[in-house]
Length: 274
Ligand SMILES: [Zn+2]
Image 1: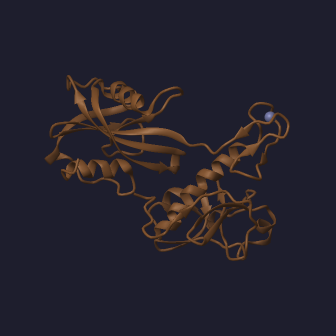
Image 2: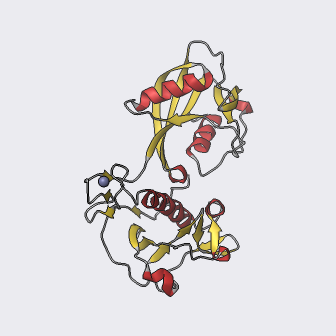
Image 3: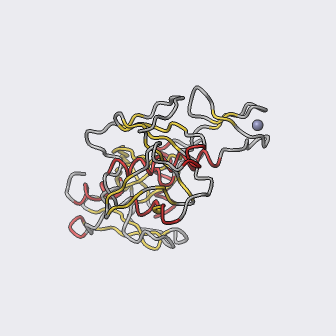
């Protein structure tokens, strides 16, 4: 999965620290990042290599990968298109740790950008000096980074797995049932509700598999395997899905994304590990 960095450790505690010349900078403009592409290799600027106009804007400490610190900058809309790489293209590039850094940084950038003003009183918000938060100096509202919990559900019935396909989305491969947690709902109830809403079947024996920070959509995915409970008759939620099908293990397609939890879970079932 895309966040698996091998021996490299992601350090995300908050520090209110100043940038050094050799620290790495993440600067976004629109849906692109300031970076250099050399074939499939991705390189990011350092503080020292930034043009003066970009260095003048404040840089915020974001996180570190091992000892390498990453700071978020502000493009001010000044960057030329030829200096930018669309974020979607970065996902296919190397090294993996920079792909991860670009994606995590972009989620943080989106949140900072969307929390410039207080949603309660409209005042300009400020960075907290003690934690990753935006604070309203007038009414005291505190905003924390946006992370939306969601589920990915592999429903199986003996040797069959329930696969779905989205309607009206660029992603055309088979997927698993998925959906967001609602306020006041346990994550287990999210699993039951989403499966029922999307496919009309009931499930039992939920088993949590693992989670994945899907920072591309500011989500935290929680993957569950569970068994069909009762009738296998599918009633499709056809405004969201174009298809929901029981696939015998031997017929499950193998063209799954290696970066996603969905892909990993389908592969596990296909290879008889789940
Ligand atoms: Zn306020």
